Image (cartoon, rainbow, N blue to C red; front, side, top):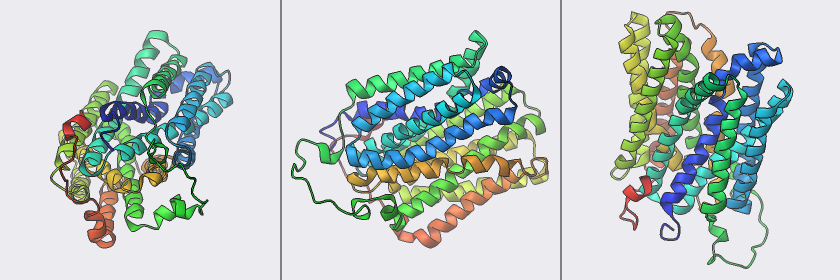
Length: 420
């Protein structure tokens, strides 16, 4: 498949699409106080706009995964990007909070289709360790968006003084993605290629066509979804808790917290780069297993650090190590979860996307319980999630998961060309 498509161009477009979800969620967070003040609502009222986005991201994954399997990648993606641009513009012009909530839901749902399709594009054109390298780079690029988004939002608030400028920026990102797809992305769906059979096949039941329920019956896919839940649960716990822990407990300034956040994101980025090379020698399942073991050790160290009152440099080092471990886990889970027939790639991507965002609405309230304890709930979760993941792999996965992707074989396109 690689000789048919411009892999590097597709990788760049997929990277832009992965930014739609994080930017939709995070970039406008500096404008929360201004939104509440303008519309005369409390902070909890403003949170409805974030909840609407998360709901849209989950539902959009479900719809988008099925649609791109049935109608191809390009046309549904173009339609969703048009909706994203219009919804983002509506956010920037919203005259009331409830219209903003509705626009945010549409923005999240349309962004989710782009995020789901970005994973599907890689599955369409790559195999084996090259696919793992693709997802390593995609995960690394996606990890930068939650850092750049709020920083760009803060800068725009400082220059223009209006939260609406942030949504104008998000609209601009949507326009860029729309133009890239319109003029630079070919159709990659296998059943829509020139040499694909032209005779229509008899209509089959949904399950036999590779629906989500059918995929979840496969142990490898079900385990990937569970492990994605646990990994993103760890990351979401970090995102929801570190602001309080580092600023209120350890006295870091907002600027200092921003630096820590950026440094940790760099660790995730470097881990993705290293994993792209490591998968040329090791199986993704084996790397993920070792990653979960290392992450569990880091979580245990974090528990001990809080219990013993360790100084802030120790805590910061452990948090950096935690995200670095996640950088070796997430892309390999995605690789194994996406190792399905290309005709089912959209459904598989949707399942992984739902797992990625499902804990978003639950994580923050749980982390908030006992936040002032000597050992906060967040530390128990950061230790418990990877321990459970390691248990799942070693008991339920065994060889089925650890050996899911065969050792790499020489292919026509060097990995450097795929991941550059």
